[in-house]
Every structure is written in structure tokens, then in C-alpha cells.
Length: 329
Image (cartoon, rainbow, N blue to C red; front, top):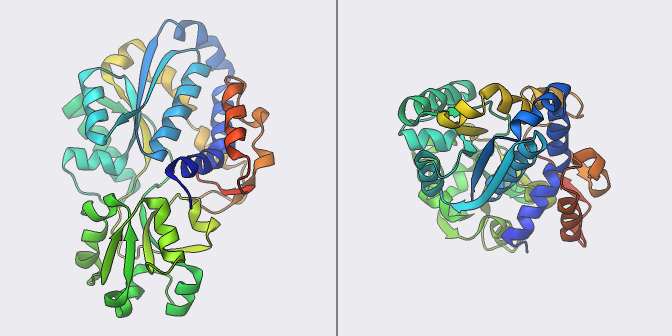
């Protein structure tokens, strides 16, 4: 079984090489020239409590410190509501947010088009909150329905709609948000025309164990979870486009941009680094589709700003499997 902490570190190791590419991309000549002036600017970065938010908050902190900014990190501030209140009230300057969460905050529905959703939140946050969305990242950390490869082969399914004939007999294991979010299990019947026979609520990582132990047949998962390939599970295609697109981006108060311009922050975050870095990785990253080994996650591949972080990370890795699914940040 994996605790949430263990899952967090599996995902952190997964992001190490990709995060390193971003940091290295940020270390350009233009960045070096601006570091002296950046040191006069204090930024407070906040973050939510979920694994992805903690990882992004840490990466943003490293990038901005590497760019010379004076950064205070306030990770794990709380829920969506708490962190949103913190940025609108000025308690923090920026934090990582996801497009689908931004749409929900604005009371808008997804268009199921990544560019259109991003533009909607970018325009909406500027108008309502005077907050700017910087460049988005091509990681879609959305919801999905998973099952074992054995179950998928037995039922001859590769997409969610194909579960309909046996849906009434299927037990689904889901994290709490999978049952409360209208775009997840409550949205299955409107989108697909069926309901699962039974729902059991467990933590996301434990949902995989529930299926493996026969307590459930399928589970609600997050599409970037390393536990999908690690457990030889299959992510079924959302062929009715039920689940929204969750692309992360740094969002920043306009008042902060007055002292730390968009151009300076964009260099720190490596505008274009996502695309350029993707050209160095083969096969091309998309959600979860390739592997790295612990040996490749060297400090030189990451950054030289916080060696203690890597040593601590390697301590946490000891005794863990050497291969992890890599997600694209």
C-alpha cells in the first residue's frame, strides 16, 4: 500500500528530470543579467495541499530563487477556497492553479478545448480579480477511470462507454472528490447513460489496492498517477469528453506584476522551455508514457540551488522501485 506521502514522493521523483530541464532552461544569459534587480523583489508563493500543487509550488519556488528573487514559500496553505482567498486578499503573490479549477471559480463550464479554456480563465481572472495567468503547462492532470489490464481484457474494453453492459454489476473505488465533483462520478450518467452498481470511497492511492484486492472492479484515478503503470492498470479513454482539462499555470496578482514584470517572471519560469525541453525527450511525453530510472535523476540534471533537497529526496527513495512513470510538467 502507498500512503499519500509515499505517493507524493513517487510523483516528485517522476518530475525530477523534467523539472531539471525547466530549471536549466531558465538559467539563460538574460536571466543572469536580471538576477541582481530581481533580488530586490520579494515574492510569496502559496500552494494547495494536493500532491500536484505541492510539487508545482516547490518547482516554482526553485525557479524563482534561481532567478534571483527573494521568495517566501507557503506550501500546503489549504483548499481551493483558502488559497484563492489568500491571493485575492494579498497574503500571497502567486500560486499554481489549474484551468478547470479556474473555470469552476468563475462559474464557467469547460469547452473541452485546452486553448479556449485557458483563454476563458485568463480573461475572467483579469476582469474579476486583477490576476494574470502566465503561460500554461501541457500537463493534463484530470480524472480518469482505471482498471487492471486483466479486467480490461476480460471485458474487452478500452474506453469508458464500453463499460455500459456490465456497469450495474461494477463496484468503483473513488477518492472523495470523485464523488462530490459534478464532472466525475455524478457526471457519468448524463454523459454515458449508466451508473455504477456500487461506489466505495477511499483515498486515491488506496483505490488501486481496492481493485487489486477484489473489493472494487474499477477506480477513479488522476491521469498523471505513477501508480497506473506501476500496477499494470489501464486508463480507459474518456470517449464522451466528460472530464475537464486541468492544465497548470502560475497565476499572479497584477499588483505583483507592477514590481516583478510579466517578462521577468516569464524568463524565470522559462517561457518556451516546456516545448524546447520536450524536443530533448524521447518518446514524446504525454500524460504517462515513458520511464526514467532513479540513476538518471542526478543533481546535475536538476539544479545546483538546493543540494539538500536532492539528498533528502534520495533518502525518501531508498527501498522504492527504481522506475517511475514520468509526467509532463
